[in-house]
Length: 253
Image (tube, rainbow, N blue to C red; front, side, top):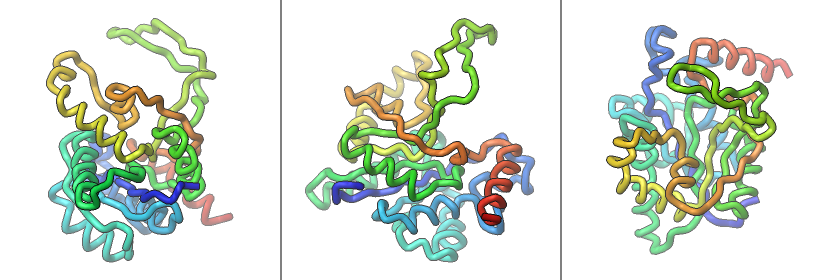
């Protein structure tokens, strides 16, 4: 279990979900109905019930702050979610905004301590066991992510979609969230990222997850920790069908 240090969850819910715009009248994927509740509720519910997480920051689009506060946090009584803040146009900007809130808290407390659990709000099947495994791992590794070994063969392709490499499947993991870091480590990594963003854009280097930021800007290696094959991210209409099946299966047990 965690070593007594504060664990803050950052739940990201600012994306527009372009691949889901024709589903449920264009409602953003994180607010779509799943089993009678918005998708985002399931992640927040797992955080609320967890013995690992102490508090939570919810990151939403500027137009969704009032809705998320009244129709999600207040309606479902998520008391651990103490702040609803505005995200950015890209994922890393949303994370950066949440980290700025955490940094201000650290300054107020005159200490940079604890751990940050960053989770996609469009992954509704977060469980306490996943959170506990990550909490155990981050104490030793300083940085870890939920992930699962790849089931399929993976191909690396060139600009023309022609295969140029086939990695050994035994070495390939599909990365999920939460991604968990020592607070000081992730703050340092994102501070360094901000100073390099323009050059990275010029070089065509994309930032797709927080582990990648830590890998690029610190010497800390990121540990893979088993999540769950059910810990899917709802991205396409087909994912909603799978999510509904998972939810029904859980209810029938």
